[in-house]
Amino acid sequence: MFPIVNTLPEVVGGGDWISDITIVNPSTTAEVEGVVDLFQDNGSLFPASISAPSIPFVVPPSSWTTISTHNKGAIATGYAKVFSNAPVTIEDRFLNPQFSTSVAAATPVTSRSVSPLAAAGGSATQDTAVVLIASSAGTLNLSLSNSFGLPIASRTIIVTAGQHIASFVSELMPSVSGGVINGRLTITASAGVISVIALQLDPSLSPITVTPLP
Image 1 (tube, one colour):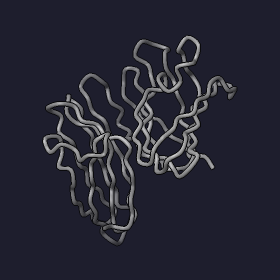
Image 2 (tube, helix red, strand yellow):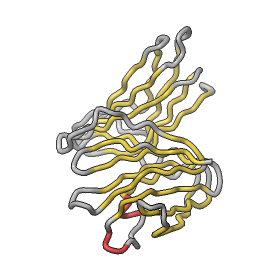
Image 3 (cartoon, helix red, strand yellow):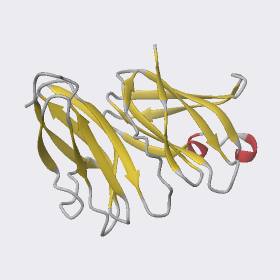
Image 4 (cartoon, helix red, strand yellow):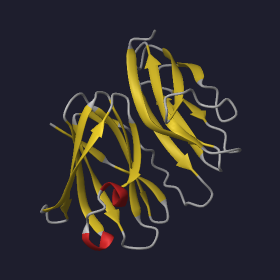
């Protein structure tokens, strides 16, 4: 088994969706090798019709490789584990013909606590998608502040180790009056760490910077 593990909290394929997973080798002198394992939401391996569930890779120094899911057939969603013998960075781009897609890639952040910007309800299609995997059983403490930094809503979610959560911020914070959100979401794990990406839909599909907190 390769000693270094990176978690990509969202992979999707089928139903006209494609995930482009890019693995970047930051070393200027040594190649890196490893394997990408793809799992569905329930922890079972990805269907072979969408992607090989285990994909080996070798990346030369200062280079990268991209692995893509297939876009036909029934939609499959889940996450990926990237195992490698040296450090890598991973990025994900989500493609679907109904969205104009940003050229930027979503980069996962792993930390005990994170904070992305969040916006929902300003238009019929506006919402922020937050996707995470919890490394340990415990609770996730969510708090939402407005654009002035004032708290407006909070919530606690019980999670199991390895639980995969993919939700819109409007679903995570249903108590917000009127359903209009424009502020910052903070998510803190009571134990372990969480791996997180965030995407803004309105009606484009763009990654949002997720800030790790102490």
